[in-house]
Length: 523
Image 1 (cartoon, one colour):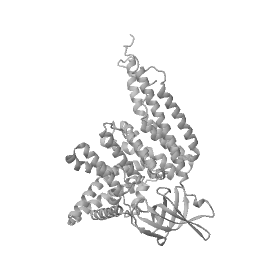
Image 2 (cartoon, rainbow, N blue to C red; image 1 turned 135 degrees about the horizontal axis):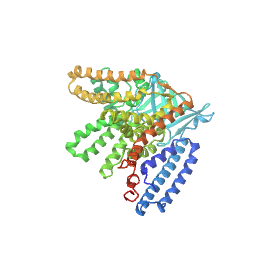
Image 3 (tube, rainbow, N blue to C red; image 1 turned 60 degrees about the vertical axis):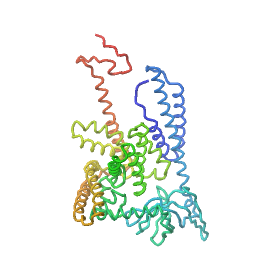
Image 4 (cartoon, rainbow, N blue to C red; image 1 turned 90 degrees about the horizontal axis):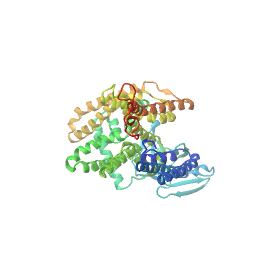
């Protein structure tokens, strides 16, 4: 058996879970069949390993590792297929019968409302009851906890409402591509209550943070709210459109980059008091509290899960790689909310970190001889994430924006500077209101630099890819380039091992094949 690297058990389980969950229900049958085949192969490998040139103990150990990987892949495939089927069964069927229609719903908001384009405000309502109508007849259908897929409600000119509030509405209910959607007017939506005492405390804290950030900047207040607490209500529509056109809309979504700034601040404050290990758990608790305050979006939830898994792994003296942390976070997050797992934000978040884990070190290996180390690291991270998400962006939006790579590299230090300055300026202006005249010009200056970079990148025309053939061709080209970049260090390593110590071309066998006996070459 050749000594090739095996994927870890979490990575294999996450791969199987994705392959079984994301395809349509028509593919769930082959996924289940593949799960049984992988399980049979894993059992065979665990019981009796194949023959090979390796020592017996190493061969048995490697065979068991390969068997465990196959079993993890089988479990992931089976669980993903079951979750995909369950999610489609939970989709509303009331609108499929021509004699029945949904006339109204009552439920609680599962996340904070958000302003959208066209003057609408979006609410994600977890329904507790549906009002069904058929002619003059009315019926109320009530649900238990978690028994219904959330309904997206779009209200023209709606008021901002935080998560946990209970609402009742009437409107035009339709079945969209990603789930049920309702369109309503402001008068068709009523606020029944604002939630529990904990929800009211959270709303009060969010309002206090927004007030403090508005003191720290005039033009930059909306961007500071988006970067620090995830509220985009006061963000200018032209600025949000510039970020999206530049291919850098991920900067506005709270993720690991934003959480790392707050985690570094928490570690710096807690390390002198609690020590390194307890400070790490304190930072993880702080990250959990920040997610509760800002809202558990897909990117932020993934970051918090990775922080907690990393802290527990270090505490147990089992440190994990980025790929293993990402795999375990994916395994935990997908069953928690399968409906959100098929949203673009969820898939783009996990795919971008997958590119950072797999491709960024390879890009850095290629760029290091030509660029300074900080520049090569930043460019490698941007290239790794961009190469990973490009196929999804191509099929989702039908365009390719090459300028987004350079824009994200240039924007990274500006985003960090604006976040650090915004936090310090908000605290300073809250304690000393007279300092507004000093901090606002700096905040607005950083804001203009960042938005100017986005608008310059947005002015570069994107490559249109409207038909399926061009989208497949562009995606295949990106995947082939990523495979070449990934294999480049391995090829260089094998080439260096094949070079002999003598100019005549003679090579020692132990340099090319470590498993062969270490005997000197013949004369």
